Image 1 (cartoon, rainbow, N blue to C red):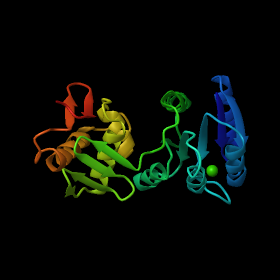
Image 2: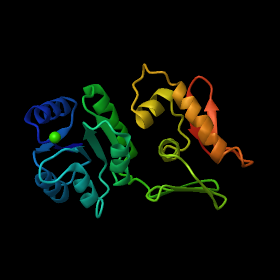
Image 3: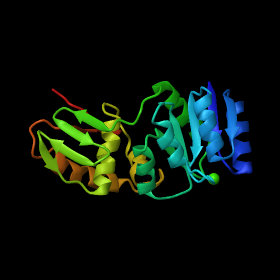
Length: 223
Ligand code: CA
């Protein structure tokens, strides 16, 4: 498995290259945005680890460019601690992200997960039963009725819908939507799910969000 690392900081790049090589990957390292884009377009990689903050051309610009003609999984590394930034990265076509500083073991887990999934492009539209989610316009409808969601509600629904049929733990949801760590009070997740349900499920006969006791939540159509 070949991985391209695009990272301008010497120390971080060395660390990534060394760690990933030791984890069994073949690693190329680009130190500028334009180099990274060029390598991604001229070589064949199974995955790209992309720092967002790069000189000359940032990670977003690179992923936007790449998504015009390829679907290689992209994992963002971001130092920015803003949900909006991450949503933007995902909207532009990145597949996952990690916030710096991160545990190396977690990076490897995320990489292996993405590689198992194979190249899938972030869908611009997600359909679950009679619900449609227009990811780019952030518009949600059920049975043709428009549903207004807050930014957080949308992020939560988007996460559940992207991983339709997969049980997501409260801590995973908390980390992805609110950037809270595992020790935080995940009650906020339950409250948000309740609000989301009030909008997308309560008015409709068939419920899409299901609680899995002791595990978390799953979004799926059930007969
Ligand atoms: Ca950087």
